[in-house]
Length: 344
Ligand SMILES: [Zn+2]
Image (tube, rainbow, N blue to C red; front, side):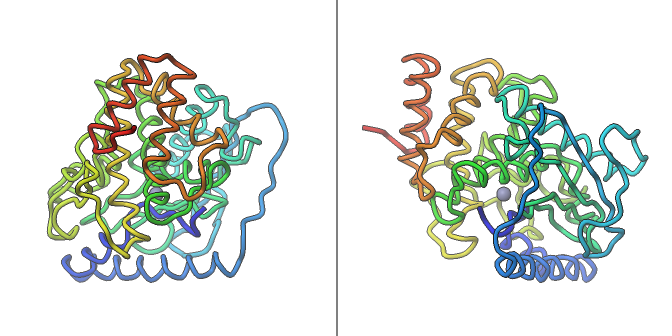
């Protein structure tokens, strides 16, 4: 898995660093600096060590408060079963970790990120005006945001689901975090992040907003979220974020770049939209049909670490035929065709 899967990609933070007022600019620059430091530290530290507990599936959360410092994990502020603290960041993180655990446990039979009961640990109030959220291989970390471009990073449950899904991907297909495999890695996090929200709200595929990070952009920022799975490229259009949302929704608009690990946060729009189309085409709750197919491909063992979009698409069609029926296979195939991946 990537050294560190931050929610806000570097090209957005670089834009914030150029355009916003001095305090916000400093926050974005500090966030970028910290993000680079983490990446280096994780490389030096080597792979994470895990202490998985073999026990019946049981939700186990532990929330910490970094109190504005950059030290992890910070002071323990809420353990599993404790009453709400009244600190919105702590309580939103607690609820979001729970919502994510419940989707994976109740719908996919997965016991936490590692499928072995890993305790879900999170730290809030990390750093000063820190403009990001990430999963570091062992725990979640949430910044408070700068308040003018980004709100606190616990506000969107799909963001929490997104980050924890990086842990699930790391423990399963372990998709390489670059180029098409990296975009698929990002897309997996958006898919299951959105499903966490849809499951928590009991929404059908038709009813869902298919947005990632709705509520994260501060009032006055022109945009509704960080990404739209339904309509990639339409989530925002604001100078402070570098202009218009750059995500393509079709293969012909694939972004070739060396930045952002080969455009992992932009080209994910293509498989994101394919999932949305498959979910709407299959109907009902997205986690019941489309989600089961995507989860099967992610965890089934046939997906290469360096998977390309066509390889991934073919596996989803085969899985839909096997787990659902031939008609479902045709629906999934048609969804991929609509984003430019016509399978032989
Ligand atoms: Zn991500």
